[in-house]
Image (cartoon, rainbow over all chains, first blue to last red; front, side, top):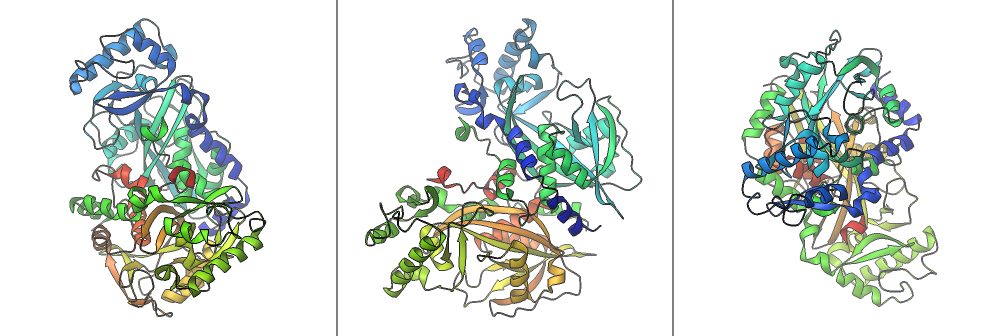
Length: 312
Length: 312
């Protein structure tokens, strides 16, 4: 079955409603009742995050840190180091007091660089587990690891997340995906995660092609996830078999692309992986403007602006 | 030179400012002073276009047609046929009286389907030359016709528009690009335009892969262009040579991808072709998140929402 036949086959499967449902979950914050109760988190005069009402309430208890619950004091909001230290102190205090336990029990001792644009100088750094409380942009890297099978056409390696994962245990994922820690480039992060999650050799990862990024905002019991995921496509050799080395993956399977599309439509993937896979399905022509009635809506859902002025 | 070396070479050329300038031109309406003076064009209760002040003034002279210069009368706004007829009459009258001559001298006797989403039932049809006066969404199809050269890597066929073209004479274009006329699918339009513009056999065009769409709104002396362009990537055989058969192309050249990137950064392409090429450069990894400092801005500029509620 060649790519055109595969595309038509997928089009006929009628995944449109499922794709839209999946995208709505990735973009759930926009239509959530929570949105209207949130306040912007302002650093250095810029909106850089979204504060839920319970976080605003907790901020009130630290008047040394903020001027109006949403803005840091002049003393704290001086430079990268003073901000980083103040936010770290607040998060550690909350954690020690057992506040926001659902989010903060996932403390990883790994920090994100916080800025509204990837190449801006970071305003501060923040423990990953706290990012959803402040609703700042969380960046990540996902790799679509696929194989061009002579009979089955494009097949993709899909990971089942370990039941021990702090977020989305048992859900499906790309072969490799992870947050972009402070100080690493997209490719450096891809190489690190590929080694940990799937034992892919760096020389192979370097052949991956960056094909864009997806962005969206969803919320769940842990907070608000404003995410920007950089996407890499990696054509893998037939004989490659991923092996997990950090215990975060339960199993890997090589699935035909229409099976992957079905699992996306059934919301079996994490919100990030689902968005990245829809991006792949569009870019490789498996979602077609002539047959997908929500083509424009899918594209818009994958490129939601996460400029906070547009959101709050 | 392999694709990674090519990507690094392009990254080092420092096209970022040029790319941003090109994108600003494609999205010029958002920042134009005209925007605040415009009114929505409302059909069947929905905003479906943008009316410039001079068009609103002219509408006033046809009180049988509108209720408030921006909304059609109940009699006219009844169904597809009544709307199509009323708009056609207005446009023909304006043309006969020499009004909006810059736009209407390009009358083609070819109509667009007007709707806010590709698969919505069209609200009415409208002569293409009038679309920029009513600021309705104009859809088109562009083909990136490229070759994978053994030494030079990815090269792309670039067309120089004829000096006789009504729009953007002498500018550069993809190998094939054109408006999506009422009644044709994206692939049917691609096949038709490929035959007319570059003599590409339909069996070859059918191998093209739809890779997404770009959207943006710009304005010029003819009016407001709210465009959504569906993109097809077509890998062409080495020995293929495009031949123009409708007189709209002055010449074709096969250029290395970094030369194409340079010409995009220098605003040598039409706004539509430039946006489609930036989309290609991103999707094929020639614009890289690690080296392009405006990566997120470029993605957002290529996927501007053209829902009129967000614009006006």
